[in-house]
Image 1 (cartoon, rainbow, N blue to C red):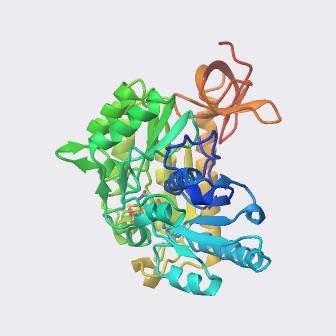
Image 2: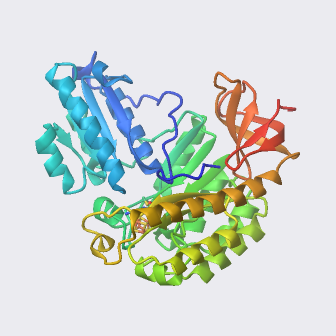
Amino acid sequence: MSSTTNEAPTAPIPLLGKPKQQGRKGASSVGKTACIRTFGCQMNVHDSDRMRRMIQDAGYAEVQRYEDADLVILNTCYVRENAVDRVRGHLGELNRLRREGRVKKVALTGCIGAAEESTRLRETYNIDLVLGTHNTYELAEFVGLPTMRETYTPELPGTEGEHSAFVTIMTGCNYQCSYCIVPTVRGRMICRPLGSVIEEVENLVAGGTEYLTLLGQTVDAWRHEGKRFCDLLEAVSEVAPRVWFTTSHPSNMEDRTLRAIGERETIVKRLHLPVQSGSDRMLKIMHRGYKAERYRRKIEVFREAAPDGTLSTDIIVGHPGETEEDHERTLELVEDCEFDSAYIFKFSPRRGTEAAEAPGTVPDAVVGRRFLEVLRAVEQNAFRRNQRKVGGVEEIFIRHGATEDGKAIGETWSGHAVHVDTDAAPGSYVTAKVESAGPHVLYAGAPTG
Ligand code: SAM
Ligand code: SF4
């Protein structure tokens, strides 16, 4: 399971394996090099995968260092201000390299590309191409490929690695949470047709992909031609050897889906359900559309359906107007739900959102203390829960091959992250005994099978 952190809830996962060629070669770019840097969530990691395929089809070789690249693509996040500060730092560095003639072109894509901020950045840093999340496909023409009209098509699948892949099932978001810039930069919800998703999943599985992650801002809000998210999840689980989904909204999460997680063998028993606060007063101010009690009931259904499963959440501390009593309610909810991990964020004002103008700013020192209190409560629970796994024998899916210390990183069917003593290849399964556990990860010995 992911660690408790103040980073993006869906932190970038290292890319493994080489994307497959799609046969849409661009002759003009042969011999050129490109570097892609990704900031933010898994949606961005996935969009970067698609751009990676485009540049490879156009004949660019991918390089890791800016100074070796003709084209640099910064695929960005706008959810919190510190993400924007980081991108500004990279743009400054790229300007210097461009003046020295070491980088020729710079493209800014992703959520900052879709925000007003991009106009100022374009002027300040002489950016050559700015694309938002809605028109990522226009990169194709920029790198000399035939014009594309859509980003998410089965013909341009995105991969995390050969053995695991992201599949976008919806884009945008129809909620208007007080603090969140996502609806502004990613637009309203658009759901991909079931047939298009299944076609992409079938292609990926036929190509050897073992692990599919269904992606979207609120995947459980997916609807299309009378079908709902659970229908789509069940259909994918019939085809995919292993499937997970992220991220979900408590208002859309149906008990039927929670039960399917427990019942269907190919669905990983892991739920990421962002709660944001344990206080009904704050949930109302945030426009989340549910009360803490309803969230608790959902968790009860999940725990009953998948008692061994893992549960993670997102929590914001220090939203304007948050009192000590509200904070206490959050701590209570953390105790009651016994999260296996949580992404805890200090509130960051985003221009254009309701919360950025709201009264009741919480002093930094108070935010810092509340952050640590929530973190401690989550970690204590997670540690306790992980101890229950010690001594058990688990079937582990290897996600990342062994590093220098001889440990590979895998995942159990319950969704726990495990360090395993093995040189097994990514995409394979091993069976091993869990020997110890920390708050974020389990440690298994050499495989027994
Ligand atoms: N759609 C998902 C949901 O509603 O649960 C979350 C998407 S958002 C990109 C990921 C997380 O970032 C949110 O769940 C929230 O906890 C956090 N977040 C969003 N805006 C924020 C802000 N202005 N300050 C701090 N955290 C923020
Ligand atoms: Fe942002 Fe709320 Fe939409 Fe999630 S549901 S993306 S937090 S507006």
